[in-house]
Image (tube, rainbow, N blue to C red; front, side, top):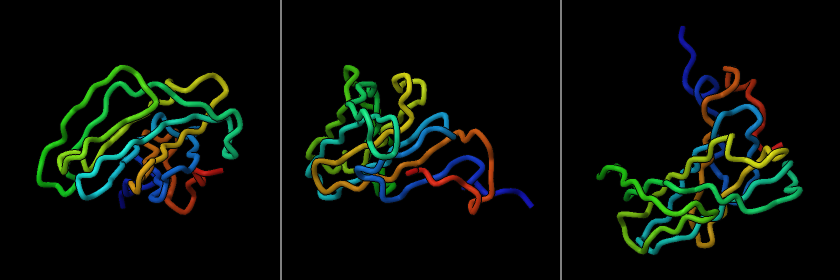
Length: 145
């Protein structure tokens, strides 16, 4: 029997708004952000040395992200900006959903945790991808410790 994707390709924290996520066992993190109603939101990316937020600082590495309505009715739209620690989605239904990807190589030396925080009521799902080692879901490391 083949191993399913959870544990082989990714690990996830579905309620990750403002939560520190470990990048020790993943090559990158994809943050899946969503706020319905076409009201727009601002998401701020930070890095820290540990799960307690030691040395927390903005991580100005986001130069590209993607947006869509989030309901599967449209294709993703690539958006670019000067490298920044924030992503601002417009007050438009076409930008209800955003995907922000962070590579492990973007972190400062000694930093292993990242988080995105919504300034509005947006939800954030963190998906740790390209795992260092495949494991059964029950054996995946907790991402917030």
